[in-house]
Amino acid sequence: MTVRLGDTAPDFTAETTQGTIRFHAWKGKSWAILFSHPKDFTPVCTTELGAAAALKPEFAKRDCKIIGLSVDPVESHRDWERDIEDVTGHTVNFPMIGDEDRKVSELYDMIHPNANDTLTVRSVFIVGSDNTVKLTLTYPASTGRNFQEILRVLDSLQLTAKHAVSTPVDWQAGDDVIISTTIGDEEAKARFPGGFVTKKPYLRVAPQP
Ligand code: BEZ
Image (cartoon, rainbow, N blue to C red; front, side):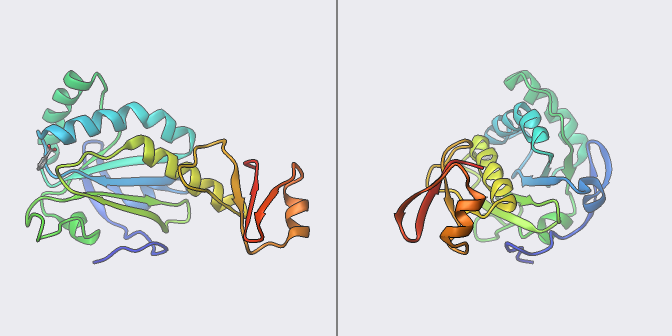
């Protein structure tokens, strides 16, 4: 199944390192990030999980829960978590799905057979408070993801969900934003009392609301 932006994130029940989880019930009205790892006891994944654990407080500040997945069993995840702590200094503090039967991997199209027919790719799904998919990313097994970038995108998604703005290239939280072309200058003056700069009629820049 292909999961696209705007789709309702498919619900599932899965065994995890923190017990049985029903995805929609577990996330509730929070945002959530579901991400897959090709395999337990592999080097790149070990570094990624340590980084994700270190950033969990930042995700929590944004009311965003995180949940990992690999096609190995929960017991294997638990053993691997000891190595992750040992190597990275971070305790894995979020649930890891044991997707031995690949039910969730297939539901979210995380196995790309022409890359590898048994392991998942490195998928990321950011799901909004309304349960719709806001972002998807796919990385190969050989390239670790940048979790600071995932946090940056989350900041943009949450800001643009709330205000009529978009965020420019390389934007970081606190930088200027672009006023949506769907609102005219008069409305923009009311919504952005700090003012804005019109670089082109379609490119108006304002301080982050
Ligand atoms: C890794 O995490 O290093 C990895 C996992 C699966 C295949 C290749 C590399």
